Length: 381
Image 1: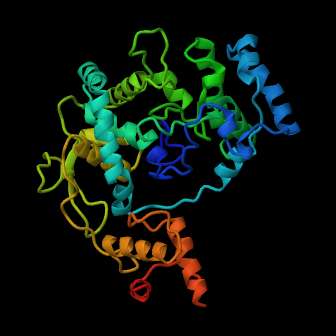
Image 2 (image 1 turned 45 degrees about the horizontal axis):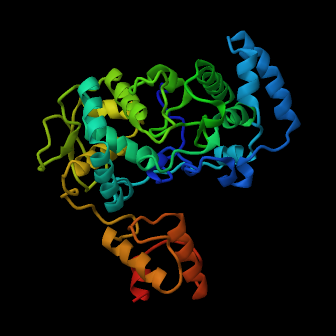
Image 3 (image 1 turned 180 degrees about the vertical axis):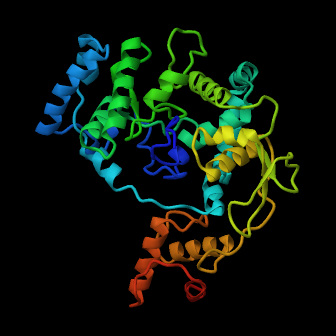
């Protein structure tokens, strides 16, 4: 598959989801390394130092000045936590129901409507220039960084150089590191502000460095393509520019649930027994941002909710354990009430819920499988 913006596995970015399908969530939104875990701070590593010394020669041959190299690498270093996160990514898939429970949660919808209202003028101007529906741009913002709250604060030069030296995809991350250095050299951002996720995705809508070079725009007209500042204008416009150049058709809906005003298009049912959708070519444009049907439906549905639309109308079938979403919410609530914290009651049985189930099972002397079940729900009363 062609690597586009960032389909190199880093999380539901920001879905806070910890993974709309791309593994590894964002680190947070503090501006300094003081808020980072200790394993995401530079540590001594002789092998890494030797790699950087050799890389400097390759970078110079690629047009990176000595001044840029000195500035960009000042205070950076090997980040063991980046390697740990890269190696420990778990391949898994969420059902569409679980995905939408997080991607279009009540809180994300509410925050999205508030963010849309605050930035209505900018979003309208972005739509007028690039033709991409303002609510779709806002929804991508919401999924990627929770409307700017979770942009990531890991130094990109440190993260990409660490992964280029000690990661599974060295050549790919060396390419990202070179692109990051060119961003610094162009003057778009100071080296100290070149931050992102542990895997190098940056800004409000999480561009990797090569995609930033290809698609980022200076929408504010200040001479810099600044996707890192609190002002999201350049990020929102860059996202629209990306979609526009990847096939977005002005005035065409992404799709929608069949029976709820969906436009004509290709029929799609990603979860057997669940809702059916009609999708258009703009659905494929969203997938160029993240090549996942769930992601594209998540963006489209969240966009519709931000614009005032309602929840999915059709019901989803029980899960593989025989539980409906309402059952799972009840299970989480009952466990939490008994002192086994599930981390919330959203109906999504993730690692925290499974830990709580296992702890409850252990307390009864049962095998700690961590699996939910109708019997467990009944036992909790």
